Length: 333
Image 1 (cartoon, rainbow, N blue to C red):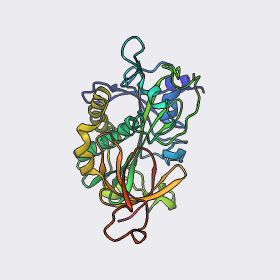
Image 2 (image 1 turned 30 degrees about the vertical axis):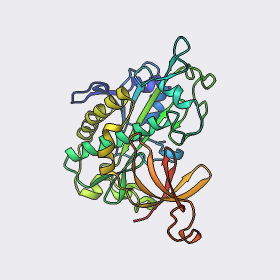
Image 3 (image 1 turned 90 degrees about the horizontal axis):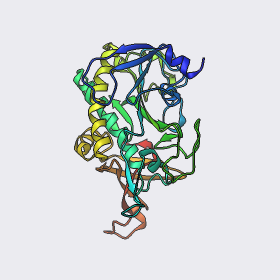
């Protein structure tokens, strides 16, 4: 069965809630490989469409890791066409000045930690989406939720939700430039990809029992039911998240920044003032997290040399840095 046939086989579910940019009509599937993959391959799908699957057979997380997506969890993707996404103006004033579409401007460079490009906007999308999940779950009576930069939601010391933003070219913010499943033109033009769509995938562990998780993940991940002892109606959870997601996405796509959410993001961060080990490309370094900047970057007090190697009273063993891409591979209490 090809992608178009799969989409035609979907059950259409009308979800409640006043939504501006996200559609109330949801495509529901019993089983797919990945809702993100299906969204990126879909041809005649409106911007703001939602794909929801009962289970996925090839769900993915960051770094192309396999995401266990069995029945009982909430696995869905919202797709946005590039015409809806923010534009960046490039070039000199006058006739040479042009607006570059969001995806093109993100892809112009391979330096994902350079704040002069738009990688930080994608980090921002992940962050505000995590915030939307937190807001929605809090309204359902769940307390103690936190955000682990850049795209995870935690509860009771365990990961319950992951967010993956992808295009038909690659995943953000940790993917490498490439031409996956689409016809592409040279970087730096205003027409990089014929299918300019961004897929915002959210995987939330809701009602799965402990035995549905691989043994090696039980100390790191859990479902809402495992932690709270309560079972949740999946459509109610989906509707609550879509309402909150529509609100934050409307802001970030229209204003092109996340400054309005910075205070709330910092209050929900589980990383503030904690020592972390970060892998960025081939580099691994340690630092203390000082907060989330108003452009989505993680503010790190980077440890560049042991204190014992510098003179007493000299603080040059540390430096402040803004992190736009990277993976936190160790977190100390």
